Length: 574
Image (cartoon, rainbow, N blue to C red; front, side):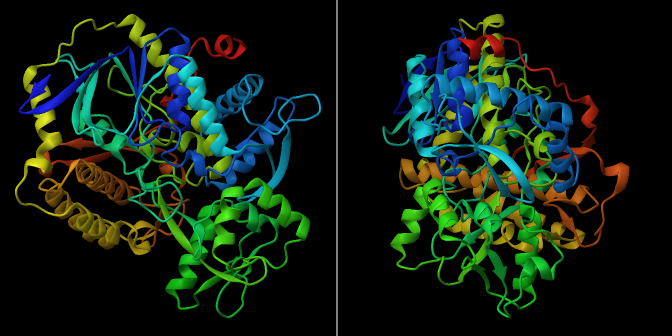
């Protein structure tokens, strides 16, 4: 098909999965195992783009015989509430079954003498006794890619999806976008779509964040879906100044100490436990820097040789990277800083209404970091061990739910209008055809300067949030007139447009929550808000174009449905 001189490749499937990280590949595999025709589209190489390969291989592995109730109590306390224990218990149960099944099918797991996945226990993120699997995250993603291909999932790589399409009745009918290497547009017909595009880091400082720019959040919001708990999207993680690193939470728990320029242990100075919850460590680091006691250095000299060797074995990517710097970070204190990770460590995302990833849009499902995770993480962070567990289980659930929806709502012919498709395609290529406009990377820097500022993203006031919202809305207006030099530049234009919209949802939600907890800190409301704020927020876009803004309301955790979709146990036994 040729449209206005552009080649358009057309695709049809039962289930379209947007994103191919851990959640996306799991969703695609699960849907395909039911017999559904599945297409997985991603901006890079399936299994290699996004944050999953850099997760460090720390995945929670609680078994029925463990003290699950004790874990839930500790987890809710450390994350300052808002957790839905019923939903989290289902994640824990199905996570164990999922990794056991993957282990039987050849997943690259460390195994015991009987061949079963081997558990190790560690201190991390405020927890003193976390059972986890030892996983090589890069090899694990390669395994999931092979698993998806064996299930006959088709991969549409180097593809940027820019808009979702739906019928006049409001149901999802597909999506459109472009392939940046091929230089062509794509039009995909699908009665079920799973958004597994990851979170939004505004291209932050941590590993694997170059692609996670809130594309899924923005597409869903423009279609009328709600973005939930977005005030908790401003997360930070301690990051080495020499080389970006995961695994630092484990290092800190092994005996590493964060010291200010006066040599003071900042955890002791701020009255925090060791290891400290991630959001509390980030707050302590930010305060030390703002109050002039920086830089903060990470002192690893107290770690034993045995612990060092074990860590290097478990985090080989970071070990190689640090070796290339020519500095021994275990022999001398090295400056570390609070690296901004956006929603990846926080818990905001597209609101789902049940464990199958159902959204308010018929036929639209969500999984992984693209989904709200407050029921699982609360107001704090899931750290890696719960992030990976949630990614796998939510992908499994969404894949089964989407395949079931597609069986019940086949779409032999699309009912979308020609005008809707042409408008979407025109909006997609608009920056390529624009003869003048703003440069996307320059506008991204302006966006980052607003969003990453800790006095906007973490230490908040009404006045500061309102001023930042005014700046973001001006950036959103500029993002509608970006100019792209080529197809790769076009991808950046759409990312900046999406990230600006997500920033507005985050700040509007932060303005609405008048209390402090977890990643959300209001200097004008410094304390927990009591029963009134034991709720979640939901931001819905209202209006058209650049004049649209977010209306924020609250909703009760008791309204969440926590029954997993049918067929999970049968699939994992197969």
